[in-house]
Amino acid sequence: MGSNLKLNDQIEGYINSHSIKLHPVQYEIIKYNETLGEIKKMQISISQCHFLHFIIKIIKPKNILEIGTFTGLSALTMGLAMDENSKLTALDKNKETSDVAISFFKKAKIDNKINLLINNAIVSLKDLYNQKKKFDFIFIDADKENYINYFNNALNILNNNGIIIIDNVLWYGDVADQNKNDRLTLKIREFNKFINDDNRVESLILPIGDGLSVCRKI
Image (cartoon, rainbow, N blue to C red; front, side, top):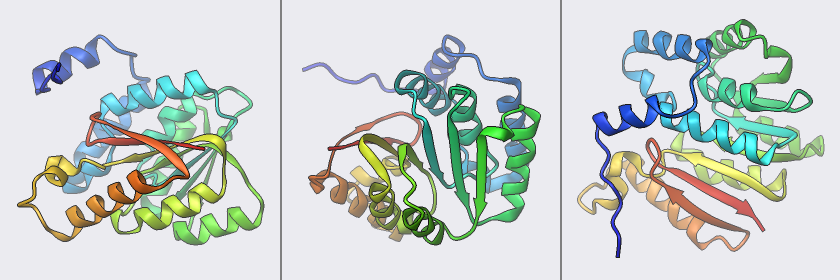
């Protein structure tokens, strides 16, 4: 049986230098996030930027939903890859980081494609359900304690054959280490088991960035 290549910084650098080139505003967000200290880890990785760009280009979703926007790198990545007539709805409760994200969307001239709703995400998800909104693609990268809640609410507004991608499902590799039993690691393990057992979707985990779970609604 073949084995997966173990990535290190050198190999990741090589991969990124031979992949899709980032937009100048994507680089600006990454540089800005470097000034934020510990919370910069909330940003998606460059390899995840490449993956999101590619999958959006391939499946061409008309309506995208993002749960957890931070300073806007993932939303900007998807917005740049979307067709001109596609729309992205972003959910985040932090007004300060949302304002930063909006400023970057404007700088990249894609703010007309993105509607950022600043509110508790569960409340916004229920509002979208009541408004009978439907989405083709949903990206979840928010507080881990609510992942199951976010997933269930997201699935209610996802079209059949639609895709949900969830970030951080490998949690620095801790989910596979039975000696790691802190609260968040247990939450991610619980979520991964929930997805694996859920017959409403078929799913796989990709070791990109901190781990992406890719789910298709059946």
